[in-house]
Amino acid sequence: MLTLSRVSTIINAHSLAADGRLFFHLERRLSQDTPSQAPPATPADERAVFDAAAERHQKRNFLGMLLWQVVHRQAWIYKTESVVISTFARSLGASTSMVGLFPFISRLGKFLPQAFAGRAMEPLKRKMPAVKVLALAYGLLWLLLGTILIHSGVQRSWTFWTYFGIYAASWCVMGAVIVGIGTLRGKLIRPDLRGSLLGAQHMIGGLIALSMVYVLHRLLNGDATNVYTFGCLFLIAGVLFIAASVCLFFMKEPPLSSERTEQMPLREFARLARELMLTNPDFRRAVGLWFLCNFIFSCLMFYATFGIECVGAEAWKPMVAGLLVAQTMARAFSAVIMGQLADRWGNRLVMRILSFALVAWPLMGVVLSRYATPEHPWYWAPVYLMVGVVIPLGPICENYILEVTPVERHSSSLGIANGLMVGVAFGPLAVGALIDGFWFIPACGHRAVFTGIAVLMLAAIYFSMRLGEPRFQAEPRRAPPLA
Image 1 (cartoon, rainbow, N blue to C red):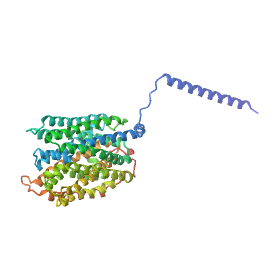
Image 2: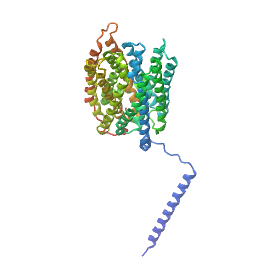
Image 3: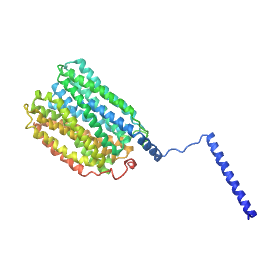
Image 4: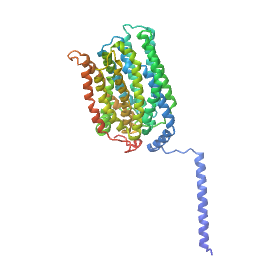
């Protein structure tokens, strides 16, 4: 039986509920009529939006990056440092010491601009527009060089230095492209897919490259002059580099704000580099290993001069295409195997395996130099097989650095790491001087110098054995920013 007080309580409750519903509808209507000021997005909210967008476009970006790398690799066949660049320099009359200028300027041009490119790119929410422009400019430089050489047709007094000048300018641009591409790979491709990307790039690119090597072989063995022939090679390279830059338009890059909205001052950038080297031991050791890797690859042209010394110039020229095939296919299979190992077990394992190959590679040249003769020139081929095996170490080191630094710092971290590689540029000059003899330095010859390089590479094993494995310790995208 309802009492008077009970009835009053029920009526009041219904009135409050009705008033609440009325207030709710009124508030919703007002919110539709008058624009509301949404609270500003927090860094956590922006990161969540970015992660969702990056995952949504993962397949598209993987394919776009793969296409860029495959086409870029085809272009590189026509300007391979180990064979094409050094062979053309020697055909222009360059000595071994002059050949050493090419790896010197390539390493200086490759690494010095990267510190500045890293500073410039870090505040950008989107790095893609800058990378597209730089990649296109790189292709245009090789297109220009090829056009000049074809138009000239024969060697002139300015041919060598024009070749050297455009080669140097192209590496300055490529240094900035490398930072941009590395940043995009760290930003858009998950860590456990980067090894698969590396393997797919080299396997697909290696198979397609066989047809490119055939074209190169036909051009090198034609009746045209050396200047005209290499002009054609560089013209093809320029066209393919431009085609590679077009592949970047396929990718989708969601915006992600950096901690900074403007370029970091040089003094602060230097402090960041010092702090990163002192407080991040894995970064420091990876940089040490990467330095040694870059040093030995800066000496790549001397494997050509060593081979020419053993087998003779006449036997060497018909071997160029075959050596490229050996290097390209070894690179393809090595990248697939090492990429799968890196995805499954982490980059550290691959860095340890290939650090032993760094020691074996120059020793192989020393041993095979006693068997490679004009009558048996192909004894030198295993040296170029080892080139292909070791090449994936560079990208693996870069992927490792991307994992041990937070995503907001990828541009500056890669810029710092590559900026520290400037010292590598002086390695080829020293090696060339030691081989040929220069001023007060006596000529040591290829065998003694390559033995010394193998001893130096023992430090790579030391660095690799002291690395940590970040893959299974923490989520790299959630890593705290540097202090």
